[in-house]
Amino acid sequence: MATSRSEPYDVLVVGAGPAGLAAAAAAVTSGARVAVVDAGERPGGQFWRQRRTAVAPDQHLHHQLASYRRLLVAAAGADWYSGRTVWTITRPRRHFEVHTVSGPDEARLTLAAHRLVLAPGAYDRQLPFPGWDLPGVMTAGGVQALLKQHGVVAGRRVLVAGTGPFLLTVAAGLAEAGARVVGVHEANAGTGWLRSPRAVLRNAAKLPEALGYAATLARHRVPLHRRSVVVAAHGEDAVSWATVGRLDRDGRIRARSERTLPVDLLAVGWGFSPQLELALGLGCATRVDVDGSMVVAVDDDQRSSVAGVWVAGEACGVGGAALAAAEGEIAGADATGGPVPAKARRRRASAGVFAVAMHRAHPLPEDWTGRVTDDTLVCRCEEVTAGELRGAVDDLGADSARSAKLLVRTGMGWCQGRVCGFATSCLVAEWTGRRPSPPLPERPIAVPLTLGVLAEGAD
Image (cartoon, rainbow, N blue to C red; front, top):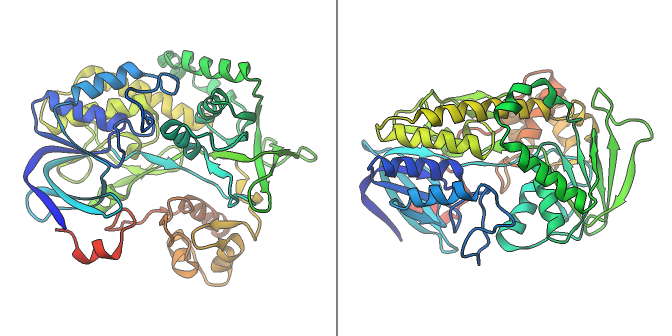
């Protein structure tokens, strides 16, 4: 049975990561009646993810704890709905209706609000390579989530690969937890940061954090290999070996640079993709960000193109916790009609400059599509290979990720294109000579649901 709260909240925040917490705190401070809905059992999102048994945030796995505690205390006046997933948002009258489900029995609850702040976060962006479907090949974020929330080290002999500062976070956490990290393989040289000295200087507070990760890796004798990528994973029932290779200036594997290492866990991360399902379902306008991701277009007050909807955090562009929190504070304050603190705008500007520099310093390797073989799975849910996908382009006339989806079912499985959508879009664009098309089309249902919930419909 579905239940509902008929009295609309002034502001309802979807997501309890840095952006959502900051938005809730700002809205509560302004005197508004506020609710926060989050799929997690505890607030914090991926950045401040906590173990189920933890009474307080784990000092060893989290930083910026002072910021977390301050936001949590400030947002304490809101009504909290944890462990609830928002599957759709409707607007049948003058207010929004946020439809949620919770638990294995999918208990339904509908919440009403006059204004929304969407802070849904992001998920790991993945690129296919031979063997990436083997058990033991995981996203870097998934490996970190197991460690943070459950204290589980997903493997004993680990190779971390991909690009971006997040790799250092994951490797350091695994090493501290007792795993043997055989290496961090960063696809870029690191010299890209030299092109943005002002961005680094404006965010000098991040340097101690980076030095701390470097010290942890040095203490555990974890080597960092730059301009190096994972080429393939090998094994029978699970990953047992990983082949890595060094990149030349054109992003191709250098001749005779490949070597194979024994591993039982491969943690791979190529940045993050904004989670846009709810924003797209409401009709919010989008744009293409500096890293090629589709993001929600917002104005200087974090307002989307849809009246009554503010968006903050990674959905507006992946840029880290500091940027997300600044955007959330601006959105929460403006959504209540209160003044936006000038300090929040300055923090957003500073963190935004750093985010752009980060994306430019850690782009995807130029020739990654050339390492995808015909028998490499692109869509793991529907088991669609790159050869089948290319056949849809060459033989059936597919000219976009969407048309390929209709022809060979890429993105039609459980993840609905969240894992394979970006790669599918890039591969089809490569083969057709066109610009990549948006991998996530607008859809009315944001998460997988049972037929029973769909049969009841949205209240």
